[in-house]
Image (cartoon, rainbow, N blue to C red; front, side):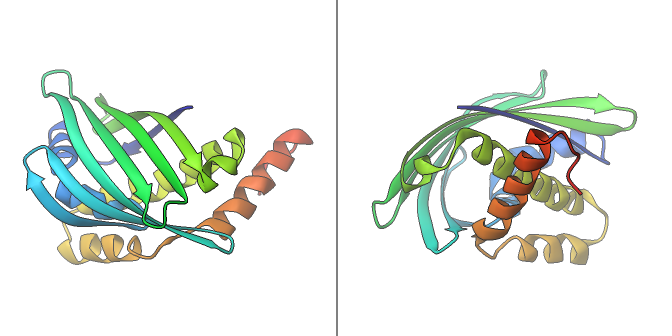
Length: 187
């Protein structure tokens, strides 16, 4: 499935690009993710914890930077993740593009995601809503990383360390789906 998300950070494109290229610094900005090992300049190992209601999943993830075009401000990462208890797999190709936006930087993410096992049982629309919430949290952490205050950046990264709480994400996503179904805006 293809997921498209965009967000804006209050920083020049050069600073946002430098941060985006620093994978060990941005991995902890993804909710529930932790960097385990730097293999080399384009390969990393990470762990991501996700809690979907009563089901807790821990994904061992291999991350690879397959493309980086500084002139176009475009980078492609590939992630191959497997649940440590063999209850599911996820493969993703994440393309990030940066563009100046009135003194800030717009970041467009296009993710091609394939899920198998327990995680694949959730509906496509639900996965899109959950990913949207994850990207919002990720964007807030990136903004803190780009801020001048190191303590704010550390606090934002620490807040992301807890496992992704799927139950809250699930109910929020369901509320938005029902609101769309009945033609109302979610609160």
